[in-house]
Structure formats: C-alpha cells, structure tokens
Image (cartoon, rainbow, N blue to C red; front, side, top):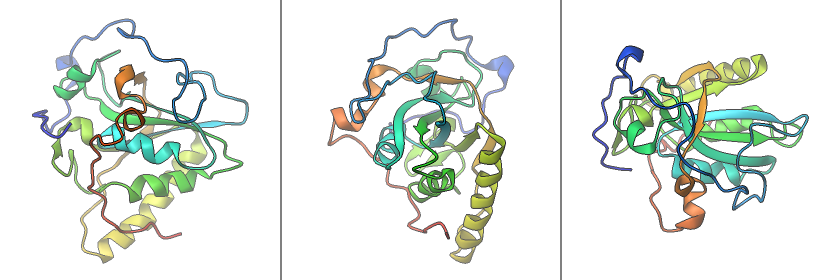
Length: 213
C-alpha cells in the first residue's frame, strides 16, 4: 500500500484502462466482523448507503465497521472510469478510481453527519492525491453522496471543518464531493483486511483536529 508509484493526476477517460464487463473474482457471502451480507446491492428498508474515500481502505473500513448503527461495510473502487478494475489496475493510476469504503447504516441509530465527521477525523483531507506516504490518485479524499440530504450535510460538515482546520494552519480541504459513482467491490483478501491481518498496515495521517459539533 505504501509504495505506489501511481500518477497524481486523474487519468482522462479516453486514456483509462478498458476494464471488463463483469467482476473477475468471487467474494465471501458474509461480513467477518458484522455477520451481515458482504455484497449489499440490496439494503434493508430504511437503511442508507454512504461511500467515502480516505486513503488506504484497509484501515478505513475498520473505522466504520466499529461505529454503532453501521450494518455492513465493504471496500472497493469508486470515482473512476474503468469498469470492474483489479487492485493492481487501480494502483497503476490508469483507472481513475479512489480506494473507497461503502457503508450501509441505519439512520435511526447513527446520523450521516456523524459518519462524515468520523471520515474527516481519521485522515487528512488537505493532502490532495495522497495520505501520508501513500501517494497516488487512488488515495484521494472523496465523499460520494447517495441522497440530496447527504449532499447538504456533507457540504455543511466540510465547511465547518474547514474553518477549524484553517484556524490551526492547515490548507484547503481537497475532498471531492460528488453524486454516487459506480462502485466496484475489491478483491476478497482486501475485505475486512485488518480482521484477517490484525498487525496489517494502517495509514496514520489524521490531523488530530476534531470536527466541530
């Protein structure tokens, strides 16, 4: 994860890798930490989906599956052009994707604003195409909202956080906030990676600055 030589400019769609029509790999049926379905293309009634990119998705997923009210999580690739990419293709910088976490949650138990706050507090959203020593477009910060209310909340929390970051001499937030993008599940070894590999790599690039509530 740490030594990618990926480009730091998002590849133009016409130059992206072609990809494939279907996923080239099989996923486990159940989430190892939450005992929920891993593939959540269909979600329980009343639940919502949140998609975040915040650097290496191994540690990012671990953060979200521990939040009460989260029903299931997965890691994958979002915000790019190449359909059904592989990890190696994403790391090449030629797909346009960022490593992402897909969070399915019960809004009656956890507010979207709290998920956005957790997102901001566990990485540095001012670093552009990197997180710490991880450099490349696949490490960029992103929020892909799935409802108009999520869009509103994402911008509100971001604006509040920018004021606090600026007060502490951090630069502009570079997080891209866009409508939901096609999401492609990552290979099974990456799913709940840190549960399978407790001593595995975690990116530690958080600013330590809390989001004002």
